[in-house]
Length: 578
Image 1 (cartoon, rainbow, N blue to C red):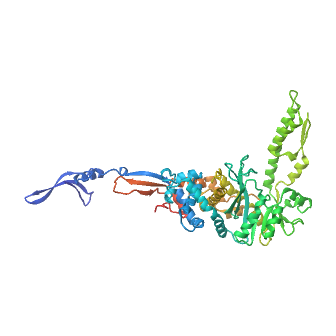
Image 2 (spheres, rainbow, N blue to C red; image 1 turned 30 degrees about the vertical axis):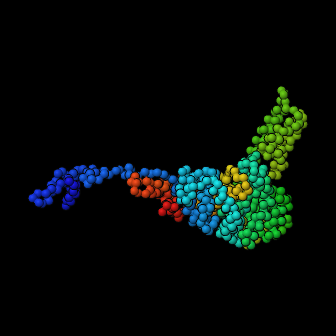
Image 3 (spheres, one colour; image 1 turned 135 degrees about the horizontal axis):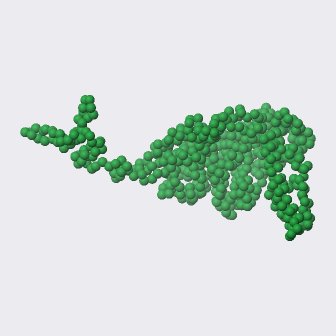
């Protein structure tokens, strides 16, 4: 018996159950049943039985998915590293050590963690993504990562020099700023107590200085002991720019706490470097006293270029930011009010009839706590005896400080034919791009906690964070149309009335922020949530139940949004597998 399919000219084919037999030496056929009304699956099952074949199993019963690892975010970051040529920048020769360094960079972008957690996420048995499988690092422990860090350390100078060659050129602006990071443990000589810039008080810390382009692309980073004074690091940066990077003409941009008068005189000017920095409040008051700056000039414009004998051969750009003036005035008033509220409580405790507060030292201690909390000591006249306490606002000092609200003065050695007045202001304001790098270190890339015991590994730990930010910065720039990030900076610049005024967002960025939809009619993401979305593109390890067939990997088909991200990045979602 067999199942036959008989075609019909004007109707669907007939499915017949037939039997062959011999009669008088001839082979004849007869129909036993019409199966045309049966379902195709039922007909196929009967056909296999008649052919002595096992019943056909359901598709889902033919395979097992033995492992599913997040892959899309790995492909995006690893592909970007390849597109940037960062892997060959780290070392031109492929090696396991280079792959381990790349793995640590990728890991910090997609899921910041300790070296122990990173190693665990790479190993085959405990993998949290496809990263270990793609880089053939499925048998890794934390000691391997520490050895890779030691391998990277002597290469840092060369890598930074290559980044400088790629992003810097003679006559360019170079931003320099410093931050700090709390330190765990007590054995590393770099861990010292100092002034914390990351908000973590009472802990050992390190400080680090970052050189970056005007756009905020990190070029080089250097780690110092936690008690290092910021201005003392300038000499090393000047040597780095002139010596290691070979830049003959460069403009160093730094804030007034870094580029002090002494550092400009001893470190910057002798090396024939130009600079842009800002003056401190006492220096601004001197300019106003000497009438080099007349505040009435700000009635018509918000920036003016002046000169003064104390700064020969230099340009001074005085600016008035009304928005900053309003903010500082409101902040001062709120701090003064809060201080007075607390001081009134002390006055009441001194003047109460029952158990009044007595003793000059005790009263002073309580007053000191209030004054230190709000940093308003200079604005009050305080009188303390063993039995009395009085205070009053120092109106003269408050008025003198109020005059300078919103006023700042930039100081530069760059000639006007090289940088115009407005360009000087914009160049100094670009220091906010370095602050953005520091925020990235402290949030997205988790520079803290630092648990390494040796100076070398602490320095490499921070250097790896810089390389991770270098990759994420490039990705965010490329993916800007899909992110809340402003993808039309030129339009935003055109909307700005003055370089002194706050920056504005372009109309397209405002539209994305309000509608939460991109120009491609897709949901808008932050960089972090887009990485989470791409992580749902999974590498599935599939094992056929037929033992004669080998297992294989199948990548989840990307959604339209995910496919758009891969297209922008120029990366294949199957990277590492096909």
